Image 1 (tube, helix red, strand yellow):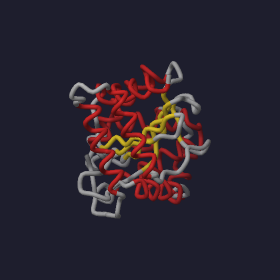
Image 2 (image 1 turned 90 degrees about the vertical axis):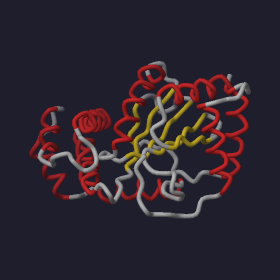
Image 3 (image 1 turned 90 degrees about the horizontal axis):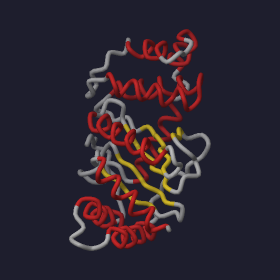
Image 4 (image 1 turned 135 degrees about the vertical axis):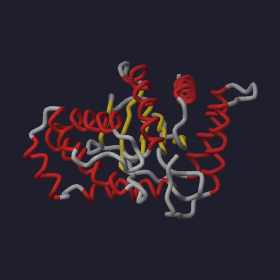
Length: 240
């Protein structure tokens, strides 16, 4: 989990609820997972996680009106984000095709990864040309080739654009204009309000799972597929 020194105060209720969720997705001690999820989501809802609502301006993979929406804050040079990206691809293969889960990507480029800001901008330029389809293709490609930790060669950015069928000249004009810096910063500030970096144990990736009742459950770090799956199954079971 990648982090930087950009600390804010977070309500203790969110922290406690996050710890409860950690127990729910890793070790239930015999208690039904549905009950743990019910208890913890109530605690989190009462503490009001302050996250921007999902809109048509977001990068959404899957059905926008899915009963579970996972909003992920990610850094394209974070090795833990790269790992969690693979986990979320598996989650979407299992739950996205049936419309049960939607995945929302929001930018959170860390200052320790200065190249991540430019890569986020490049992904937005892909979105400009081809909408969400090209955005997700671009992000998938970056994570598939980056060594992480600020090691991706910037010359790869227009090559990725070409490989996914974008007009490279238009891509470069967009990229050099830095026209999407404000949008990326808006995502970043949303992540700060959610609580990323508020305590030493939080960083990227950081996700918020939102069910159809508006309950919000945090996933802190690159949790393994089995843990995320268990959480999703519990929420789906509790909504029936």
